[in-house]
Length: 82
Image (cartoon, rainbow, N blue to C red; front, side):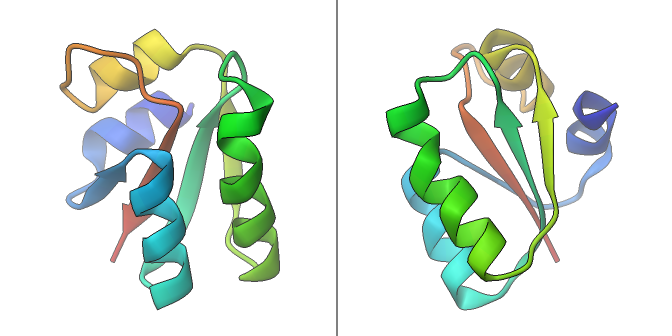
């Protein structure tokens, strides 16, 4: 599951703005998106990932994704980088 990928990743970027920026720079291997996040928030990330042909994984919970990133709040998107 993608929570484990996030936990095991050496380099991650948390948050939608930073994820879009990293996608445009070409340093993202995979994007993880929480399905319970507001569509308005994650749509730009999903669109950019598709344009850049970066794989997208979906998880069910922002809260669990935030925990996997070792932060105390939920995370809508996470980029796993090189």
